[in-house]
Image (cartoon, rainbow, N blue to C red):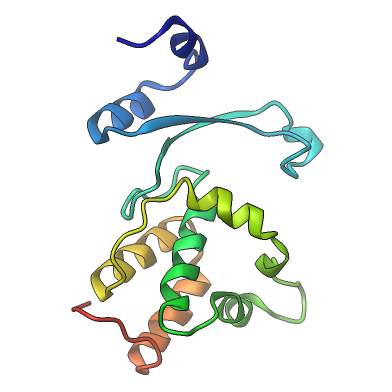
Length: 160
């Protein structure tokens, strides 16, 4: 049974989020878009709900992108590749600058790390991560990473 305080905090949380949290024995995160987190003014006060910690194969719910980018960074650092450099290659063109995740402070990545279940680094888990990134509409980075796998520039233990 949950406390009255927890019940009040979860008012408005969709049933499918509650069900996912219960089935997977995880917590529910209430996200309120505000100025402090850099959201545009027209979105201030918007509320989203998500299950944490993020696990591979959770897919897209509109709040998990940072978690997936954190894991991509983690996986690639383990084989001495820089995710930010690869990300820039995937998204840079003459018409727009890529989001420079290098500018995100360490405190951002440290907070994201608290919301992520870090899996074993291997090919199978990297494939699951690519599937999540694709589901989150980060298709250009996925295409480039798959190309790098095909070229042998990315190699992990295990099978793809």
